[in-house]
Length: 260
Image (cartoon, rainbow, N blue to C red):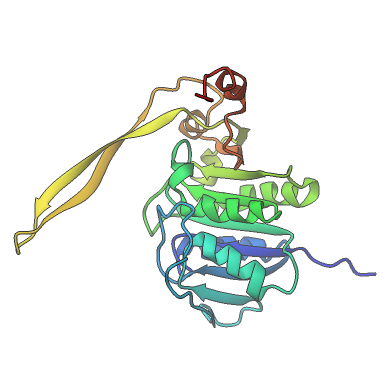
């Protein structure tokens, strides 16, 4: 009896025509049956936003000729794409959801704001093993070729071993040639943050407006962080959980006087 290929849902936050998702689709087609549901326009920094006060459109599209998988363009957020894929488009629960390849790193605190990772988290919430892939290169002309073999390795391991309930993988690639990448490191999320500022300006009509700017500050000197791995030329893999409970603080919190 012929074994059924795994069904792989592919999405992203840079939009369905972005070079990163086109590379990810090509790699996934080597591993299983692919279906694509991705935003019709860039959705970077959307986090886990979902569409609740507007209509949502999703239609089948042909981005590239002579391909044998279906692709759908969605007017919503990355999380919307996963929701509509699993509830309206797919005939069965996918074996895997992959999101990316994002133009720009989603290491450290960036995972909170990332549409790429929110799509993966949404899949995880629905019980689907999921991986978010990002490249530390913000250019739309970024070279994704060096990521291919590592994506296959990590994906094959997830398909073989599965992931624990409530856990998804956050994978980030350094901006290096394939021969310069030193390997894969399993890491923790670095304790870093953005020091943000608003650049206040005035329009020709006299109306004030703002551009969000800032600097990324990483004072975490740990050798086991994703930022350190990327700096040292490794692919970082961080297991991410979406249970945000601070379990270590529950005992202390119970000692507070909260019943007055």
